[in-house]
Amino acid sequence: MNEPSLTTSLSPTTTPAEEHLASSAIVDWRTPVVRSLARQLGDGTQLQVAERCFLWVRDRVRHSFDGLGGA
Image (tube, rainbow, N blue to C red; front, side, top):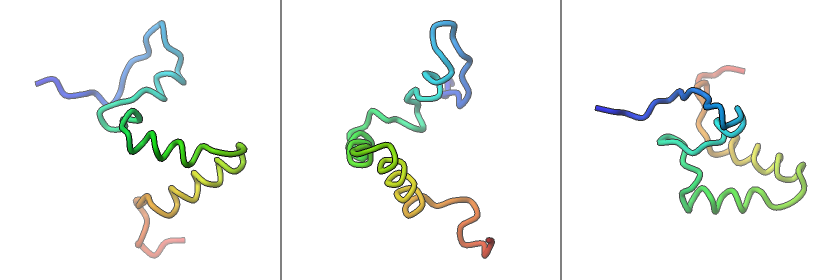
């Protein structure tokens, strides 16, 4: 059975940034919901976009230490 690999080797025709930003079986930026969110978060100055993205992740993505009473 061929399952998608979580690690990929860099090909001579791509840069590390291109490999890092590539769509995968786990993170598929090509889906309509992700593209819509990117349009919403990506409108404005770089500072506005950075703040909007930070707040979106902070408020909506559960982190490994959330709820453990840590700092």
